Length: 106
Image (cartoon, rainbow, N blue to C red; front, side, top):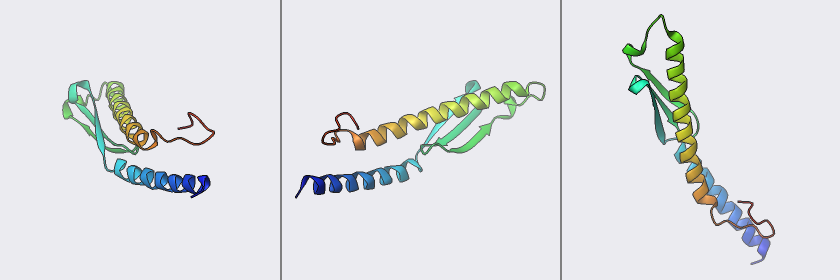
């Protein structure tokens, strides 16, 4: 088999693996927590937010800005965790992949 044929086969296999992992990432979740647990955000590893839970004790009509900060912190924490999981899983597919004439591309 020619080098180009091998390369095309490898690229097809890589694409199939990446599609499978992306589908799996859409089902995996991580949780971000702020304020000692009064705000919880669940994010999917496809970078979407699945849910936001706010404990009643976190709600103070006189300090909405504080609640907004807690929600923002928990959302960012959850999304950071989701990115880490996604990078790890996608990196496992591309590790060791070498493209002739393109060192370090992957």
